[in-house]
Length: 307
Image (cartoon, rainbow, N blue to C red; front, side, top):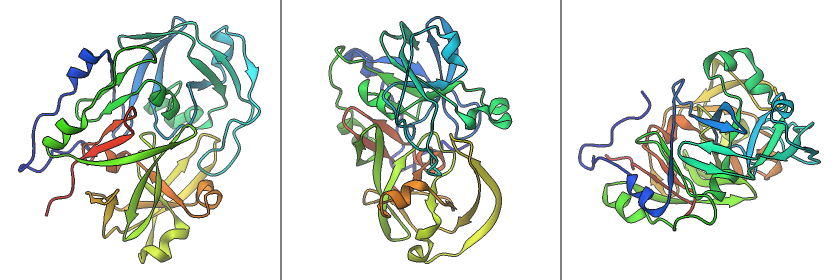
């Protein structure tokens, strides 16, 4: 189980149900596999399962390209959609708008839909274990002032023009959680980290089961990499072998947190950012530290490491 309890000195029941009083709707989060988060959606009358993936950067909902026909919405080509984690460009993407989207008790219209060749979810193992049809990413979550609650497996949404801004920080800090900001660039979320004393930024990525650091950072981390049998497949279908490295310390913002050994790989964003973006902050760290993600205020809340 990756949702470990908080240290007994600060452990308190965390509930964000009062957000409903401020006009937020509630979407149950499911966990078909450890460190994998999904939500059920109904789009234009069709029931689908979406990966709740804060590392996926678009402004709406992205579905596998096969659904472009069944959704029966007018579409147009997207010239530049983005790149996968390996740096490979994702091509053949089209865009439309949903007549109706239902997530939990939240109903919306006109939500941007993207249809893309999502090789990672077409992969046989992924289909068998998670059965997802697409991604609910950071741009959509920001638009809806989302709060991702990993304590209670709930997603709170406040679509534009509804409800009022929520201030959850004081209550969460009073319950023993630390706070750190994250920033949005385009439709991507980044958080400042420190890995073995080396500072940088990571993509905030609930779609990644494991946190990962670019292997080119290993000399600065002063750690040895060791071979693993693990491999990863990104959205463009690029399969990569990975190694692992021992961690002496890990910080989110300036706050030490619990972290396992980290996966090491080669990522396109490391070179594109000239080494500023060093990896992805995945569910093995986010879940382990009881993280709550507030897209409205662009803040993370989590349990700090206690001595």
